[in-house]
Amino acid sequence: MSVADTLTEALPPDRVRTEPDDLATWGTDWTRSYQVAPSAVVFPESVEEVAALTRLANDRGLALVPSGGRTGLSGGAVATSGEVVVSFDRMHRILGFNEADRIVRCQAGVVTQALQEFAQGKGLFYPVDFASSGSSQIGGNIATNAGGIKVIRHGLTRDWVAGLTVVTGAGQVLELNRGLVKNATGYDLRHLFIGSEGTLGFIVEADLKLAEPPAPQRVMVLGLDRFADALRVLPCFQARLTLSAFEFFSELALSKVLAHRELQRPLATPAAFYALLEFDADAEDAALAAFEEALAEGWASDGVMSQSDAQAAALWALREGITEGIAPQVPYKNDISVRISEVPGFLDDVNDIVSAHYPDLEVCWFGHIGDGNLHLNILKPKGLPIEDFYQRCHTISPKLFALIGARGGSISAEHGVGLLKRDFLHFSRSEEELALMRSLKRTFDPNGVMNPGKLLAMP
Ligand code: 2HG
Ligand code: ZN
Image (cartoon, rainbow, N blue to C red; front, side, top):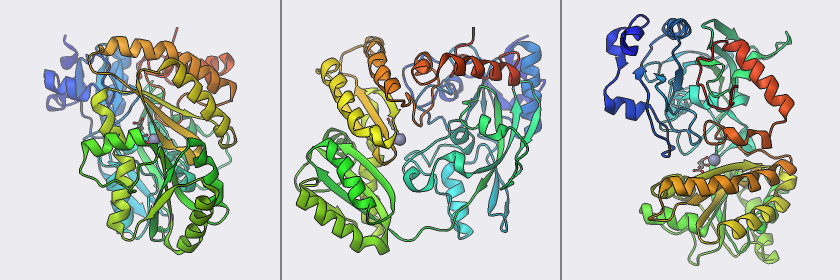
């Protein structure tokens, strides 16, 4: 019996697809470096269907890959060896909203932007935001504990999850936390599923908290001569006002965005680096005072502040367009973090590694430096075969990750481990932790049907 025929025992045949185009589309995410080879793609519509599918996978020895908006950058939703991709595209409904609790219940396939718009319609705010909000799905955000551009003020996806419905790898349906604010009844399994990258089971529905709507915002972009100045500018502003975002990018990153999209340079004279700050409009005077100080100290060379929402959006586009702008160069991605107090020394370390090992390659620096998270993208030169390029980066990664380990940092700040970083996990997690993580995986997914090979190498 073919896999597709087997799957029709759990789902109607029109929701099981095996055409090559469909396999290629749903078998991958935004990483472009893996050979994609799923056996089928399925589209469940309910919790019961996901549970039936999971039990079937256990009975018949099928491997399942959960798939959301496929905007991941670590290969967490890539199917490379005949797995069945389980897409949440048909589970995209907002199921309810409770005004008193300020909690919205979503199916896993709700797109982030749809949730943001729903919140706005209720006079509220869903504050987790990223460049991929137009296609990323809530289930995937939760499975990777996605961060984004507002973490410095509003936290990570984890901070907004009040409850989860999950289907474990064994096919049990669990209701975790049920939207409670206070619940001191032992292990909070909800938090174990957040960031589990589909290795313990499926996130099928979620209760998400909504916040007060934000005050009108202003955006400022500053030119910086030295990267280290970003770490001087940050406390200079934070001493005077609350920042909603503090991002940075290099001139190289900016040039890639400008080559890719019709956007204006933020400043008349190019700078080596740029900091992008967002804050409440009523803190404008405090921000201007901080800017004056940064100029006087020589930490900033120039600056611009948005005068309208359209201008603010245009400045944000310079930062949010980077991933797309560099995508044609199939970048090797590093998504790394250290504690904020470690950032200055860490940047020197990274600089040494980059100049010693990638002198001939374009290295694109940007990220959420206000929360200690750096995106370091190594760009593939034209003509170098992708396998050779990745091989070279993979041999240099351990040097970078050893420094991160020594500073108590993380080899994956917000993108997840997936396939790309799996073999480097020991730089951020001890052997004891890894052994406990493996035994948790076995507890929730005894037959190893859930996203095999991702996050953890199972013996
Ligand atoms: C961002 O911050 C995303 O824009 C993507 O996390 C980062 O492309 C990247 O490396
Ligand atoms: Zn990011």
